[in-house]
Amino acid sequence: MTAADERVPRPRALRDRLARRPRPTENGVVAEHPSAADEPVWFSYTVADDAIVWSDGLRALLGRPPTGNQISQQVLARYVHRDDHARALAAITRAWTGRESVRITVRLMRADGGWFDVDVRLEPTTGPDGNVTGVRGTLRDVSARERARREVDRLSRRGETVLASVIERDAATGLLNRARFADEVDRALRRGGGALLVVRIQPDRGTTERTERSEGHEGVPGWQRTTERTERSEGHEGVPGASLDGPAQHDREGIAPERHTELLHRAARVLEGLVRPDDLLGRVGPHEIGVLLAGVSWPLARRQAQLFVEALRAHPFVLPDAWLRARAWAGLVRFQPGAEAGSHDLLIDAEHAWRQGRETDRPLTPVPQPVPARDRQGTYRDRVADALGTDRFSLVAQPIVELQTNAVARYELLLRVLDETGGPQSPIQVLDTAERLDAVYDIDLWVVERAMQLAAERSDLNLQINLSGRSVGDPRLTGEVENLIKRYEVNPEQLTFEITETALIGNLSEARHFADRVRDLGCELALDDFGSGYASFRYLRLLPIDLVKIDGEYVVNLVHNPQDQVLVRALVQVCQAYGIHTVAEFVQDEPTLRMLREFGVDYVQGYLVGRPEPVDALRPPPRVRRSNRR
Image 1 (cartoon, rainbow, N blue to C red):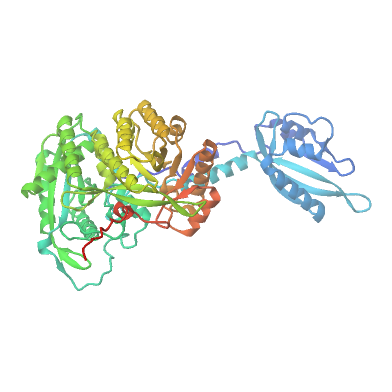
Image 2 (tube, rainbow, N blue to C red):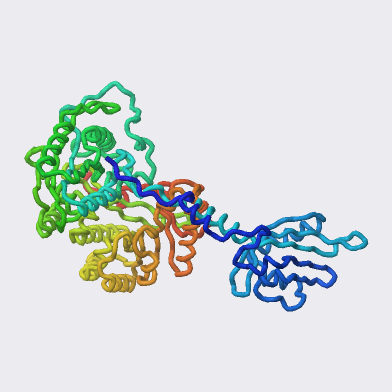
């Protein structure tokens, strides 16, 4: 029922490779320096003339004979690796002042610019009066040992920083998320035929009854204690995002989102008990579960799909505070080897099929062949137009705080989407599908116009507007933005256009033209989700970016993850070198905020500084007209 984990190599897997590396001889000299094995390797330092005397064996290891007796400062600068200078000086000082033998491992530089590792034993030398007059060092080449140690350390760090599996799961249901489920569908397409089922599940209000149980939520792992990371991922990875704009909102049937989540969690367990071992389950939407039936015949797929829907409709679901039955509709799409339709096309066809079934209350709608691409595109564009015309799109605004002033400097406008029943729908799922079917431009233009209206009403607000990479590459966008700025008489300096970095830009030439033009008008340009997509650093050079938003994945555990700290610090330094401001997303606590200040981040965004709120909260209050009547 689940895909096999694709694990990264672990240190044990490379032990054989390490075992084949050159090993030191009995006296510690590696085979690549055979001449050094025949000569003693030492040096001596005398304080009287501040000079060092070398053995011939050490001269051979260094690859160039030192010219005469060189003073200690020259030797340290030329022959000791610069990262080991401080440790070497500390060891010499300890041997000198403590009159004791000291051991240390350092790196020495060769004439060709390479370096090798040596164990050094430092012994103080004394004169007739018992005072320390110098230091003698005996060296042993341990390059093979240190190389092996560094390789083990490297693999250990890599094992800590790379996920054990590329399989990503939905936190609420434990199923594959939409992206990973789509990957498995593509894999099945390459192997052969089968069928894809998408089941829509929602509570049946007519059968809902409250129970006497407490309001604990032990049945759904992870959703009672919700953080910004889980809520944002739910809103952007194919599952509900309504909780982002404050308290959970009920749908048009009066059902809270958490009850939908609980129901979907339990429905997943029911399906897991019915599917075959080779079938795969995934959460493909806020209320949808996908079932991949790979390698099955069409008649068998239809029988299985009918069984799944009937079982879900008949099963009594006991929730923490109620029991209910579910309403379920399913779309089943057949796929065959060599078909033009990919995983996302099949998901769209199956989702359209269950919607058709819901209109007539037909439990299962089979689709024997994938829908032609032109019909699929036209159908989805009609859905987008209907959603835009029926107020199923809305905007919320999340504050962004400037760290220099600790004041809100701008607001990011975020899209929220409702489905046909008024329930929350994943914005990223809608936008991803719209991009694939070339229907995202109308959505982006709707967002831009609402942003212009808000900017015209509040001239003191700076707004950040998200745009799809495909829209930025659309030649129509530049002219539309100019016309809207003129129509609403907006100060362009209020506007920053964000390009989502996780999406490929459709036409780089048009994108550059758009970027240059909006900056000429006075707007700014930002790159969103920096570090998580296709061509971050390339875009910094190709586009006149003013602001970079560091992906929240690297910020949410920043305090406890040294690797994320290295990455975020490096990203900030790169942006500073390019003259670009930085914003850190997902900032949820004070320790993270303090660390970001230390790194030099310019702005922060997250629940610590403000949650998203409906844009109406930013609009000026209506003026009350006073009546002259008494």
